[in-house]
Amino acid sequence: MSKFKHIITVTMNPAIDLACQVPDFTAGKVNRVAGYQTDAAGKGVNIAVLLRKFDLPVTVTGFLGADNALIFEKLFSSKGLKDEFVRVPGETRIGVKVLDPDSGATTDINFPGLSPDAGHVDKLMQTVDNLADESSIVVIGGSLPATVSPAAVGQLVNVIKSCGAKAVVDTSGPALSSAIVAVPCLVKPNDAELSELVGRPLKKKEELVNEARRMNRSGIDTVVVSLGSQGALFISQEEEFFAKPPTINAVSTVGAGDAMIGGMVAGMALELSLRERACLATSLSAATVAQAGPSLEDIEIAKELEEQVVIETISF
Image 1 (cartoon, rainbow, N blue to C red):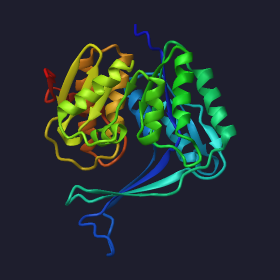
Image 2: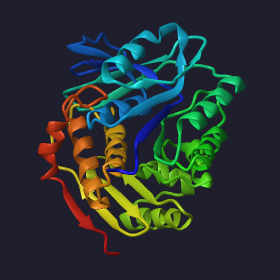
Image 3: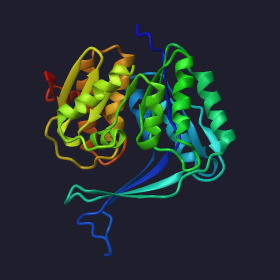
Image 4: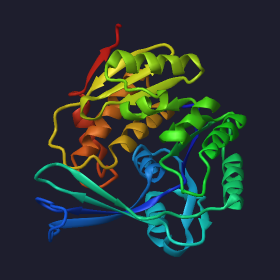
């Protein structure tokens, strides 16, 4: 039996995603929607929904607008997710995603988010402290509301570690910097985010791997560097792999990164090897790109893609 009994996801800036398919989308013109769907989303929420497909016990927390929480509450109830979100006055933001099937491009239109105050942040810290223990994996995902300091991410990592739990972080910018100082178990920057973090462009795989190794030496167990459609680097203190995804017909990149981190966390909970986790994460990400919504409807699709994922040992 796995030593990990419980997974907690933290989403401080969730969103209601309105994904529209608009063929030949053109700014400044009248555009007609061919299809659309509305989803309760946010990085930690998407990851939690995916993890439930592996029959793993998951609790969700973060900040949620009290005025339009129903769509989230229905999702949590239907997926068997335990709801420990801190309610904040106002509405959870809406994110409009315009998907152009002709070009494959996605245009994001993000509304303003919630405004949690210091009391809400303290309540979230206490909630995570109450929920986490040494058999927990806690995933911190996504951006922050404008009123929440990036330092809160590092503080949250410290709370998680003080409980003996494993902290997994998927964010960017100053929030990622704050997390890295606190030394979580796993981080997942993409190549652009890692370049921003070190303050210079990292254009070659060797440069990305070397920076990931530097983070390993600081105490971070595993660094996953996403390279978009090219694949991802999986760098741990013991092993290093490059995973190349299968060639697929891309519909939308929405949720692809969430699926990758979800695959890594599921792999941790199921005690898979790093190679197996890399394969699972890459296949889940590829399967998500092949659909319009942020959450993968059927993980059987990903299982079919697993045998097409190419895993190479990094030798430089």
